[in-house]
Length: 194
Image (tube, rainbow, N blue to C red; front, top):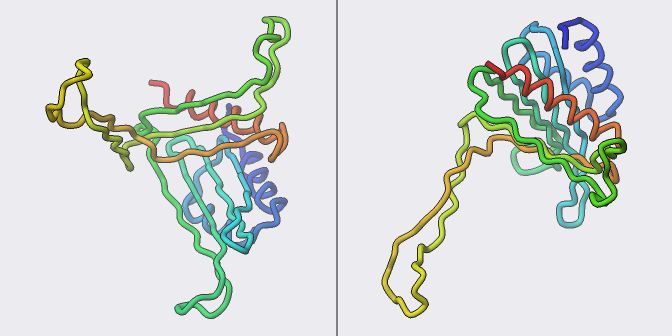
């Protein structure tokens, strides 16, 4: 995808259209961009239910010619430290050369009816990006094939990189959002190709 100023302007417009504290979100994204051009982006605004209240948050993922930028903004109710409602925005910039994996999981309904001539669009997609910033260790007791064995075989496990994951579904977010996630994933995957 060629680098154009249209992507930067389109990103600003998309953030504005989300209606979720656009000035706050844009300030965070702009600071992380540091003037670099936008080659692709994904904006995901999502409400969550926390006990008896609905809280909203937004994630903006931006691809530049040299970096992957993640910006996440949450809203918070007043608390002991801040007596007024407030937002918190965190950004992370990762060099494209550090991205180790781009995993895309596509969910297609009624796969038995799919033919090469009529492949339906995925109804849901999950994008997981790994660069080694966060590793997850899943351990479980090791065992042997002898069902009568009572020996301690230690533990076995898996270390997985799971730095960032985002899920979008056509039912909740619309098909255009799923298509946008897949387009962003393709751009990111192409950018990390070396």
